Image 1 (cartoon, one colour):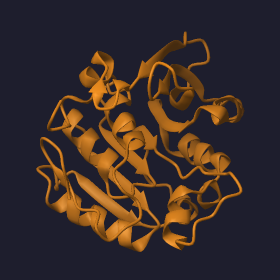
Image 2: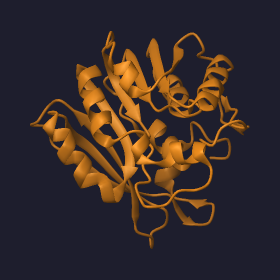
Image 3: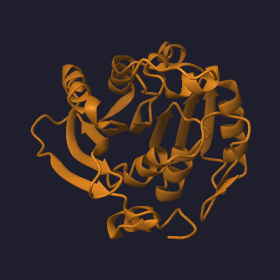
Image 4: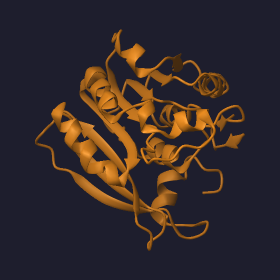
Length: 235
């Protein structure tokens, strides 16, 4: 079990463990537009949805998870949280969900599976969790366009090397970045991740920043502490 300040994550039955990417996205995703409804695509154990339940007063927080074990753990984690009445998990793939678009969402988030390198482990579940072929970027962006409300925000965490391609694809669906944060593990390391937030306004100015996680092992930067202190027990 992974214990946060206001909720816990059971993850013993799934390959999709709590990781820095999910914590970053859950803490960073813009919520100043006060979303009423939120959709988390590829919810894993429900971490990002739970973080957004803590950060917002959104009344409808839906999560989508195709892997059965992860789905069951997400449902349990939702039920055991203080916000169980606002959280709902669908056991479905994006393609099934898209066939019946009933709702619009003010915030759509995704920490998508993205290891597109020619590498597969021998654990099928883990591969499904980690590989882009489980949810191609284009399918994800297309769904975001379909479900996003007029003034909604679409936020993702992806490998930095995929950032340019992702932004170009999003523009084809008239989704434009307005906030970009590039993440490095330490001051010396390469940029590893991009946190991207998109909206429908093509004229908006893009705010670009960098985030360094730690100066040395477990010696976290002030920026990272400020971002995550409402969640991590030891921050």
